Amino acid sequence: MLTHILSAINLGPRLARRTPFFYGWIILLSAGSTQVVRNSAASLTIAVFMFPLSEELGWSRTLIAGAASFGGLAASGVSPAVGWLVDRYGARLVLFTSVLILGLSTISLAWATVPAAFYIAYGAGRVIFSSPVQIGSSVVVSRWFIRMRGRASGILFGSHSVGLALFPLIASVIIGGSGWRDAWIVLSLLVWAIALLPTALLLVQQPEDVGLQPDGDPPPESAESGVRSEQSPPSSLTPHSSTLTPPEEPAWTLKEAIRTPALWIVAVTAGALFLVQAGVNTHLAAYLRDQGLTAAFAGVGISLNAVFLGLGSIVWGWIVERFPARYVMAAIGLSVAAASALFITADSTAEALLYSTLFGFGVGGLLSVPPVTYADYYGRRSLGAIRGVAEPLTSFGQAIGAVLSGAVFDLTESYILAFATFAILAALAATLVLFARPPRR
Image (cartoon, rainbow, N blue to C red; front, side, top):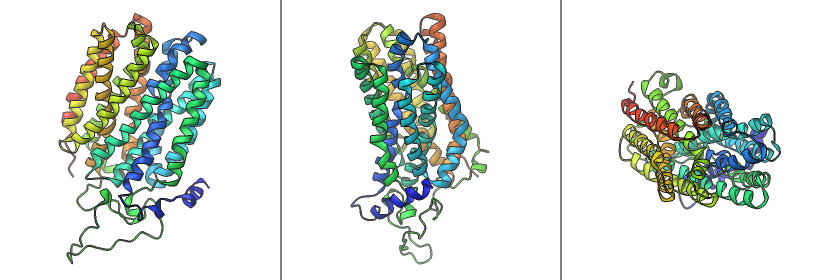
């Protein structure tokens, strides 16, 4: 029923051939709106709520961070199904439904004053954050762009940083003015206001569905006649209505891809680095407060982290178009390792803010480069399903990292041991990914 309703109101097929520029940029903007709003369940957002929740409700930091871990583990279980849904029914249905659920889970947190309710509400939002939005938005963008895939991915996850900067800042202001309950309500309204209409009205699964080519390129020349072939929009605008891959692009099936070492090396590397990301970001606001920063300066540190995450997404996306993906991922791992180690040495406000900035820049590449790697290595044919089997390692890493930092702090009253462990793990991941050579049949 929902599929038919969304198909009836979809403006994409009518607009795609009429816009004076490549419609893929509209796709990128629409997918980017979901990246903005998923930050209602981001680790930096829950970091803002950690201090007031622990003060008012008497919850430990481990308990609060455990909700993120709970959602991450649940996301690991649903990711394969999400990948299949994206390939079968299209990213539009998956992303629209995800935004709807995310808003409901966020608003329900205003009344979640017992741990079980908090875990269910925040865990549901974290599932949306980690799986359908992450997979759906990056897959649809990767299908519309090939030659410019790196920069498109960088812009997509750069939009994530917009929400990552605004949502914690808005929540901080509202918490200071009227309390954490009102903050959750406002964030939920922002989720619906920003992303519901773009996902419902504008998204199209792939350019071939509307008679276009990836990157806005002209139709390919006919191999026999040497002239350009005429390509008109198919009569049925379904996700599988046309050929997914041009001859020069790889076209791996899921069954073929899971037999290649490169898939699992990239997935394990991403999972390890996201463990570090979640372990630091979930506790970043509390760490900055422990370092003697005021609530205002802690908010500045989080905002700087988010701003440079966006900048890093774009820069690393530009780099991955020019250098082999495995080398770029290794460089990202080393930058994350260095920033994690530097946190241990921070003994001033300036140093804490600087290291937060460096960490955000490295994490920006962690967001934008792995999706490009999967698409470049395996093509667009079964990209949703392939991402679906690889993404659980990312979700699992985020789940472990969030609770690990909290447990270390509760035991040692310091994050030093946790950050040192994260630095070593990131360095090992950077070494491992160098073995992820592009797969060959």
